Image (cartoon, rainbow, N blue to C red; front, side):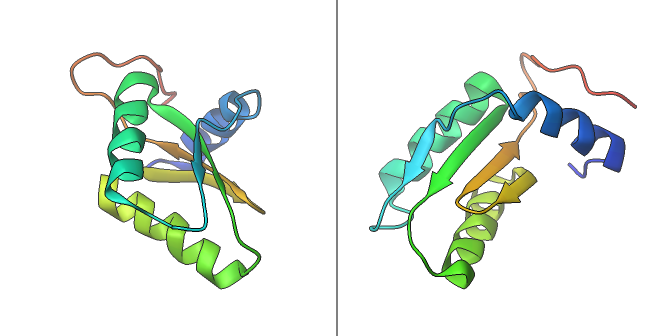
Length: 98
C-alpha cells in the first residue's frame, strides 16, 4: 500500500507520541525480531522502532529491509528511530485521511 503525502503527515503526527515498541540490537534482523515486529504491526498498525549502531548506511539498510520483509510503509525515519505503518485488513484501527 502506498501512502499519500497527507496520509504520511497524519501518521507522523500520530507516531510522535508513541514510544518505540521494537528495539533492533547489534544482532540485526533476526527471525524472532521479525515475528515480534509483524505481531506488533498486526496489533497496532503504526509502530515505532529503535535501531542500534552508529553506521548510518547500515541503519538505513535495516529500515528498508524491515519494510520490504513485512510489506510495511516507512512513515518517517529520524536518526535511530523509524515509524512503520501496515494496514490490518481484518480489523483496521487507524482511519486514514483521503
